Length: 101
Image (cartoon, rainbow, N blue to C red; front, side):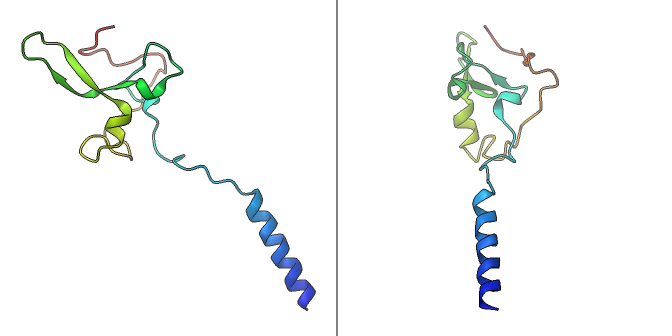
């Protein structure tokens, strides 16, 4: 009986080691959002901006957008869960309202 319990414990422990848990895999990605504006070099997603949040200069009218990373880490903006996330229907098309390339 002892050996059966030991064997079951070993099997359970080995199955736990094989299980992988990916953190944050259930939250939406900024790069798939209509408000995400890629940085000039696409491999630098941390420098991408969120066109949902920004501040307009009252003289020039130019808008300085928040970094997407900042928006996702601020509970008053998009927050961790992506409160204002809107999925982009076509991956290569972004929302161009108020955007200057």
